[in-house]
Image (cartoon, rainbow, N blue to C red):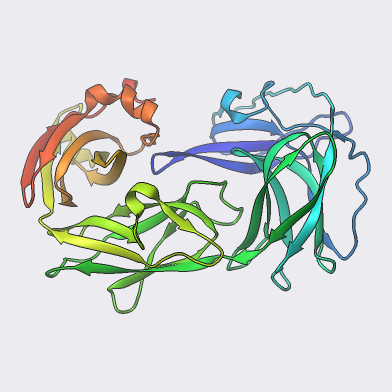
Length: 398
């Protein structure tokens, strides 16, 4: 049994699978202790276990599988009920399960990192499934049990240590065992980049990589921040597992703004960054002069003077466009007055709400429901635009 925690991080819904877990007793009863207050899915995961040894494991009763199932009767998170756990509260979640025919996946895994224990998991969309698995390191083979028919992503990855190693492959399981699957493990790779600019920028923006094509590996972060090189004109992302990433920009560089980020000829701001086992092209971040600036005030609900006195913290969101893609930039401001520098010239929609309230603003449906509270601003090259914002009312925040 698993508690799957739901948080909002940088405008995204972040699901923390296996936040807490417990094995049922012989009567099928379970209790998940000491859950932090928050929102959760409750999930019947299965018989999760991975064995690292030098022999194949015989999985008894592997002809039947139970789960995954989300409370109350959903097979995926999309249709599951979210349970809110308040401080000191006990929540009951009962399930009725039916056994389903189950099969095995068997194959070979190569290029194993020496001395590193391995884990195996199946993904179905954003769901991490519960399967027993075995890795025979000496023979370079693996097997996964309790697999019901369907389409999955199969992953093998290191359980701990750095850099992370992994391999993944899509698989389709029918009404029989799937054999002959081959996986080649690879270490996370360093992705390097440089800044190009004219003039003298007042510092350099911060870059973050967020993986968008798979569930983040346990023990790793969804957000990876680029580290500046000693010469202060280059940067690198360390040990990125192969996959696709969204690159976001935060912070400012004075009168310069980020006009483009390229990986070879690929526009990373529109198409994302693809990292393979062989690496990724060097990133080139171009800083252009002529940045705009916003200066303004947020109208506090109880009057601006009180907002300043109490140190009210606000989240300020700027939504722009780059081609067909939306761009997002957030700033945290204390009190009513704010200033945002290093803006690319263009049109923006501005939103403000109390910083203590997380908001899934990268969800287009959520943002569309709040469009009536947006202020539209056009910023020209080198222009400082003044604006007054009305915050989103508390009762309107989802």
